[in-house]
Amino acid sequence: MKHKRSRVSPVFYLMVLPMTVLFFLLHTYPFLEGIFYSFTNWKGYGQWHFVGLRNYAHIFTDPDIGHAYGFTFVFAILATVLVNVISLLLAICLTKRIKLKKTLRAVYFLPYILGNLIVGYVFNFIFANLLPQVGKALGIGWLSVNILGTDNAWIGLLFVTVWQSLAFNTLIYISGLQTVDPDLYEAADLDGASGWARFSKITFPLIAPFFTINMVLCVKNFLMTFDQVMAMTNGGPGTATTTVSVLIYKRGFQGAQFAYQSANAVLLFLIIGGISLFQLLVLEKREEKLS
Image (tube, rainbow, N blue to C red):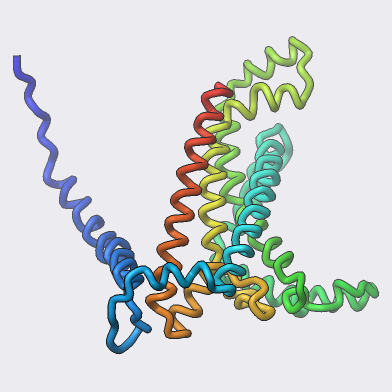
């Protein structure tokens, strides 16, 4: 007996098709065009010629690009660890029976609503004007100067990035914690399990998929850090806080290195894609062991 195939309404195609076309024109086509120009010597204007893999080969001997990748990786690792540890602790606290729980959740989520550039400019003003005044009033030397103009500028940058990123990750961990059956904790209490045993044997294994999501998103986002750097340090002092994305933008659009930095962008894409895939494979296997 033949089953009739359900007919999909044309309305769904009419809804999906415009978005598909826009996505291709605004995202996929520029990406493919960037890959194409990465094999040329185009400066962003004028004529161009194919140069094969010369741009890619030169990347591995460019000290500026090497420094940018080194700083970006260290920054991404520190930010990922700090964001996940702090947001998990916050999520655990915000799922307990505490007063003003909903208000506190809204307060912690507020930074995520603000734009990265706005937050960056606000903290730029705080670091440059407010904190030095406080430091001078209290006689604290290291607080009396603008940290963004010193060799420790990365600390200010890391603080703001972690502070703003906590909201989204905390929200994901709260969603995960709310899926844990309270009966499991009651059973653990009857068995006399300690707080750490409850967390390591019940909580963490059950929210492992949410941990995987947060880790992958954090690494991907922090390897592409751009807005905060542009708003707070512009990659300085010197090139101390120049991330790969900032280098691609400044050299590609302002330094007549469009093709060369297109190759750099393709390389960054491959690195992020490879790391994300590796994380998914490793963390999913870990989830299977914990479950």
